[in-house]
Amino acid sequence: MPNVCPALTRRAAATAVLALGLLAPGIVLAAPTSVEIVAFAHPPVVQALQPLRTWLSTQGTQVKAVETDMESPAGAQRLQALGIKDHVPLVIVVNGSYRHKRSDGSPVELVGFPSTSGSTKGWTLDEAKDIITRAGTRR
Image (cartoon, rainbow, N blue to C red; front, top):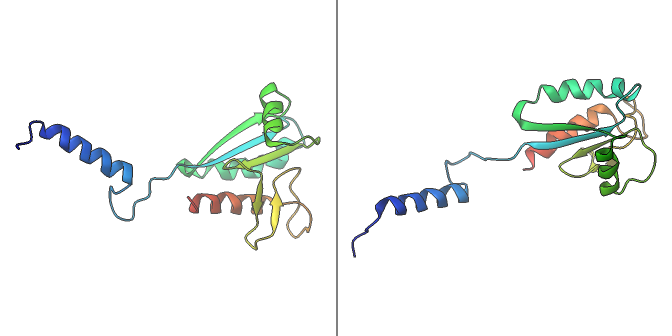
């Protein structure tokens, strides 16, 4: 039986190829890493996050970063959705979670002020950057 609508067949094939991600070998079409910063919009929080904000601005389309003022209704709602009830100055959510693993496998929560390098408590800005970078490579 002859094909009465060859354009439809080509369109269906093209859609299938796109849907299966078979556009070209080795090309991965991944969504950008999602980073949400829920924080107070005043000092000293603003200053503590400035190095991370600067770094995020250099990541181009690989990272989509959004910020929410913790004291706004949207910020309070987001904290509630994350299950955070304590008074904290900031939370960094990467791909939907603030709980992650450091590169050595130990658990870390990106909550509260960042610690200085070499500290055994909390998290550092370098660890946050590493978590964000690794989150993008796992997609």
